[in-house]
Length: 230
Image: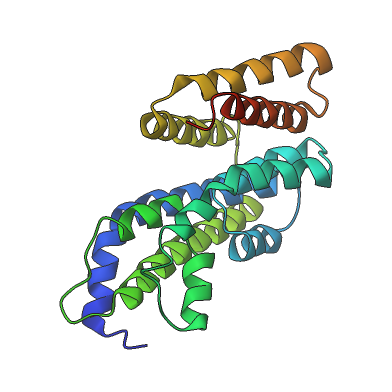
């Protein structure tokens, strides 16, 4: 693949800010998974290796701990990660490479990785896809290493994780702010808020997430159709 030491050093240099965020967040995930779900460290590590979905993994911890059903977990995860499909579409023309590389480029794509690879140029005489692949792989490794360290620490030492589950709320708050800044249209967010409040008032906390997501999606699609998808 031509991953020279110079290329690796260049990729590592630009990923340092993401590593400083991914490792502690992964550590928090590992701790919460072991503490709230009650499963062994290996399951937390495997979730990061296989799922690698950041906010969705924190969401899964809360849903699993609350005894949520598979349908609710699947629906919530799908809605939360659907934005990655649009990330991938915007990179199709740039990622004309071997199928194996493309698989990992798609699998390791996250919000932060997307932000890096769309704003940075590779070093001279370096294949762009190799540079992107290294950035994505380093970020993936940082998240998995943090998850493993947190899960092992959670099993070895008794931690008081009170308040640590607020990490999920903080992550969603950041995602919300980013979306509001990008979309610059308050109405869809107000519709989603209204859907959540109505669902909570009518149905209570039981299946609230799945019902509110469905209702919000229906309202947003109906509003888009009404306005001719302007």
